Length: 178
Length: 428
Image 1 (cartoon, each protein chain N blue to C red):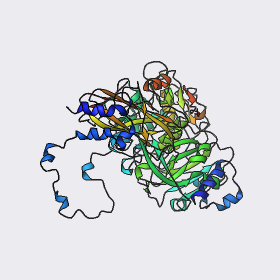
Image 2 (image 1 turned 120 degrees about the horizontal axis):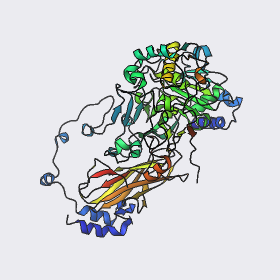
Image 3 (image 1 turned 30 degrees about the vertical axis):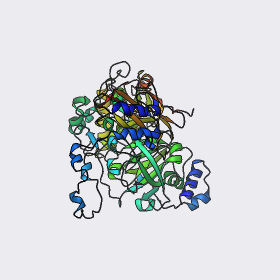
Image 4 (image 1 turned 90 degrees about the vertical axis):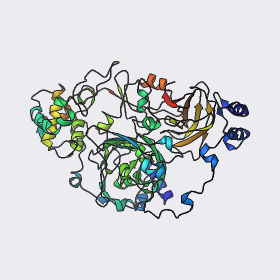
């Protein structure tokens, strides 16, 4: 069986896959529709794909933050006991320690929505409404001076936000055989 | 120590590098070994009655237990852990490598990194979804997945943050568990992910996958599809038994040699995408910020590395004489080709013996005979893998990448042995 499996995997890897090989595969999965996947399909791409309907402003986000986020992330995202969300813009170059926050380091605003939706609040993740998620993302961006006080975040505006460290990343090149 | 001089004389012929590093035949039963052990004495208490008939030799032992545990005398062989403020399960636990031997990490001692604790997953309701850029999105139960042909792979998993203390300006006064304990090695058994992806029908536009866990953090990473098709396994078994909850029960992704965080635990969803999703853990974390402020991203392979586990801090050397220097070497690029040992802080080197089997992207145990003459020694190991990658010195690593990151520290770790036999973490 393992030889068969290895051969099948090798064929897949090389793109040599044929209908004969597919017929040999166990094929035990059930076809699922996008509507059925939707409750789990929570990831958001940098181009905004995956963002749901809804919207929020910094002011609305301030209220969400006060009740759901402040205990861990401090007043106005200053941090403590857990990660700081605000500040450090311009601190990545030089000898002093880099202060990495959402504002100074994160290259895409969509990641805020994706991460908060899946992971936060820490003790009750996946409970914020879409409007609350847009609002809290707007609040964090506004605290960092990246958007204005009256800017609304939604599926169209959030992916267009230009983060300060957007061009700060270089793809690693693995070592080649010597 | 009157016997010290005579031991040294017998051993000189076996020297392969300075400060007492010996040819491995010393351990295969040569004259030097005989000379070295001749001076050994038993403790005073044992001299009076060296072979007592102990109570356990005279009365029946304990009965059977359903799941065995180590001897109670080994109760110090445990993981140590640190957690994020206000949490009990978000953080890291570390393997006590200074107290282990061989290449396989026992399941109860495998290191852990959790981003929102360990979920208590009911395997009957757990599901795996494959969707996105595929012809047929598929849903699998655990029962269905475990009917597929399986294969086993012995592989290390190393946290991208392992060894981060070496970026500090001063050597942290801790041991191998604290400095290098976020690596472990197990035999993982499961199904090739390529088989399932092929059943779903990969759209040629797909170049990445997003892998997501069923934990409360929904831990997720983007992974390059090409490597996934070659090497990725969905693992159900760890060293023969079902994967432990702390390591992803009932199933985890295994991508040998790649950063630990990419081996997504509690795997629930795989979405095929054109580009990376740019999750938190591939942007704000697990990136290497260099001196110029730019950050290296998608640092996937855990590059060649090694560390001496014995002697190491916390293990006292009681008297001069013959010791085995033992340690672990590994590379995310392939097999370990060579491990060299130095006892004089990198001035002279000699090759260690590599314990078979030496497997690609697995821990390799190395061993070397050493005659400690009772003087100061500075012990180092340096790994070279089969693509020719050489483990850097700490100086070189920091010259190349700076010290403003915590990730992918693979520099040489140095232990200083003092005249009283104490072993400390030092920089050389």
